[in-house]
Image 1 (cartoon, one colour):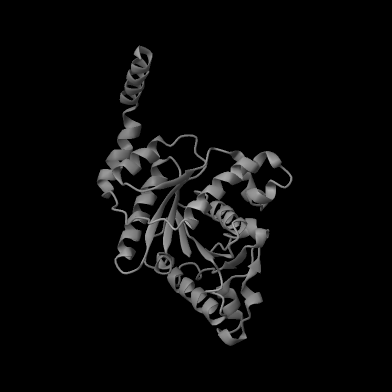
Image 2: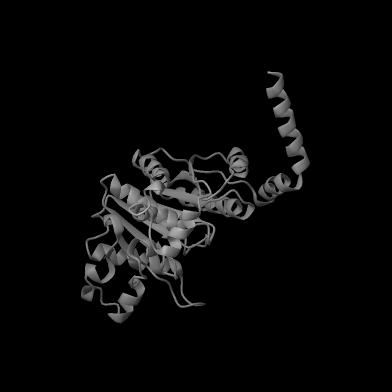
Length: 288
């Protein structure tokens, strides 16, 4: 099974991806996580350092694939998760899709691409150009990471459009949304009402999730010294279980940009209506 994780830049895709990868490994699966970002820091919390990238390794070998060995590009991370960083082209030059393609090509040359139960692509931000949409060409499922905010949901809608487009020619489905570090989900629910899709999980606003990134550790590793965080790992295990159930998934029908802008903006611009609605609900409850 191949999974592509997308979402707005800075939303916590890599932190979420690493924890999902370990959760899948805890369920007995052999997992490879491929970072598809020029920053090459997707697997940082799994390995504890910035591993060499595929593109840098190929350049050092003058693109002689026969001179590259699996141990040159595949690194063992925490929990038995194998890690690869695709890297990226120089700033202002090249295409990220080319780098992803070269990564898959090399892993196939090394007979590694089909040796895993799960391959998870962690993809750069909310860029949905042809290049960084390339992992969708290989994926069975897409997962979108969001929060309860305007920008993240606007990006999620664009990603949903990319999934719909790719699903025309590829066996790709959207597994659903994952809300990350949010104290509320009202705006998420409003978006899902307009653009129906599964919500796999909504992680509460837990500071240790952010801190784990700074420490270079996953929540699963932090639990070893902080058992009180064990409940956080259950969120990721729940996501893993839903993925392993091989859900039917959907081909989303995104909301037109102007309609979505109006929908999300009204939510912020009409707080009085929201308060009145809440008061009415409270009154109904009191009468009952």
